[in-house]
Amino acid sequence: MKRIRLSAHAVSYIDRRGFTVAEVEEAIRTYEWQSAELGRLKCQMNFPYGRKWNGTVYDTKQVCPIFVDEPTEIVVVTVYTYYF
Image (tube, rainbow, N blue to C red; front, side, top):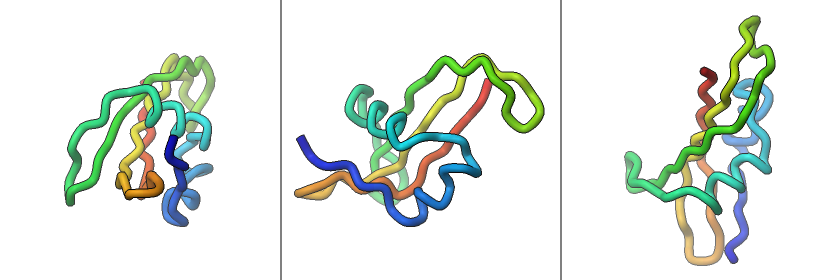
């Protein structure tokens, strides 16, 4: 099983976008990968949320990592988070 490494850019968005490293790893290891721009890959996973984010309560948080599958590791370039 390949190591998953978050880039400095992805790490810098953890607090701002509200995702965890564990959520990113679970999404990549569990859900189907799709093609993304610039030859990258993406996947998305919904998590039960039921909390307030930026003043609004949301039932679900969707984590969408954008990554590159390198020969020895998976490098996460960025992570998008959606609340609904």
